Amino acid sequence: MAKNDSLQKAAGSPVKIELRGQSYTVHPLTLGDLADFEGYLRSEKIADFMRVAKDLSSEERVQVLAKLSSEPLGRDESAQAMSTMKGVRFLLWKSLGQAHPNLELEGMDKIVDLTNFEQVTTVIEGIGGLDEEENPTETSTGDQESD
Image: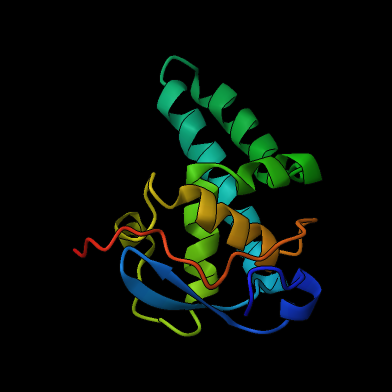
């Protein structure tokens, strides 16, 4: 796909991307993928809370956990999380899963790093349907290092 093709032309179609010298097929995110992302965000919020909640009573922890577990995530919160390191890593993992089922979330750190984070973020925005105008799918990071 040419660099200037619009995302509308790419919507629904897998695209190829080269990361760290390897070629990957990136599939568009599904509603299920985005629901999984919401669950991931919720579990991250709960884990963050549990790390700092040691001084609270059991009753206080239960109340906060009940609230964290039940309150919906806002659209802005989800959109902001999509551009974080953890968010990009999770969404790329979900989008690669169909073509590369053996990839594990923990292994995504070997694929996404600071040299290609911006490129991957742009691809994730495109396959997630956000309002980006260009799709950098057939580009390379130039990082030919392999693990």
